[in-house]
Image (cartoon, rainbow over all chains, first blue to last red; front, side, top):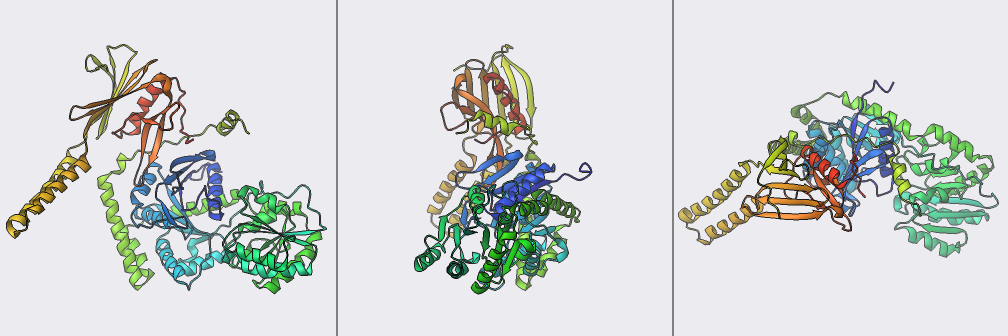
Length: 446
Length: 191
């Protein structure tokens, strides 16, 4: 069955990758690992993180290029429009790439790399991981950039139907080109506790970055009210951020130091331990395209209470989640309903259900279908492609066309200066099956 | 330092547009192994740089003679030309050699067009492993052959000035592995 299908050579491009931890980073890593298992070749390109620069290999021979361009704001590389053309061209030729897959609309590296890949005629797939607004200045500009990138993309992927609607509206992309492939969770790591915490005291867990969009202001209203109504409820809050001060103030004001525990930043490896110490997971985000956090919580056997925003209603079945409007009163009501539902919850059954519903191998297979479809798109020459850019707007369309024409000319210049034949192709190394085990054996674990 | 310019026997040679790789032995004995990378750098680059320099000087002279600007412009353009030539052309390298003396050491030589030779000797027991590494710069990515030295944090580049293609580097790498007794593993780790 798999012998018939085409094996792709995929280049994942984003500003966000290991050693950073986050939704996009984990998505790229897990997707790459599963695609490698399916027999495809995957290479990741990102900017250098501090002294981590050059070529590194991760598990299963995942090759990562840390290109030494310095990030300038919020992990994004300085946008120079054509600066990345030489290195991206070199990598595309030496690794014999067939599909370029960019991640996250807020990554300048991704947009530039996709533009150069299109100029050189490669098939391009883009995955959007977040929801964005339409009205503020930052969003307007970013949506214009997104319109430019997506004007000529082969296929696009969104993580939920809500996200698809949002992306299609922001970018003007025809909906037929957008696939919905949800994120998944590593159920092997997120397992319920062997011994359930006792129900004499109900523990509600919150793990998120403490920023405005994660609804910390809602928490500040909800927590004192719940503590007042239910004397046996305790809160554990993991995570750090600019809004942490507000939560500390709330603790002081209502004397909740023994009822609300603040853990500070939680390492990704510790997340499971924090989750299994609780019964209920509370998510108060104001906007969310998908929300992997509630998947992790459900996989650990916690009942979830969440705000009904973005793609959250699409994620979990009704018996595993209680939804509320992003309003303090409604959320308190939802928490009360969840506490009443607790006796009927079986964590192991929840975990098993999550294992069936979400797994990364399924995501990889669906992404493979998107790549197959992308490769079937027709090859168009520069003039045909330019007509698509003209639809982006009266002034913007002409500007984008100019940018693409200059890019094309620079590419031709580069072809003369450094012909493609001069760039040697890298042979594919096959890692011996047990090479990781050998290395672990040699180094004694402390 | 020994001079290996007599009694060459060429065992193997590969060529491309920019470099020629020659593997030869002295006195047809199997002990001493020499690998050369000879630069065949085309004259195109020199022609381009000198032509640009001449153009700049010509413009300055034109401005001085016909438009009556001051002579200092000609001097500045001359300085600029010298700076540009030094920057872009540097010191041209004729060839780089690796002399492998088993059980003794490895000598790395850089021969310049001007006749100058810079040599660097590495004793055999200081070499932990010869490795082929991919180097990434902001604009390109290329292969280098390096030696990991015991007790040092920096690796020693075998070919310091030239960037030969990996199919030439592989032969030198295999010879170095044989001489230092390292196993030829088919992939490179970083740390």
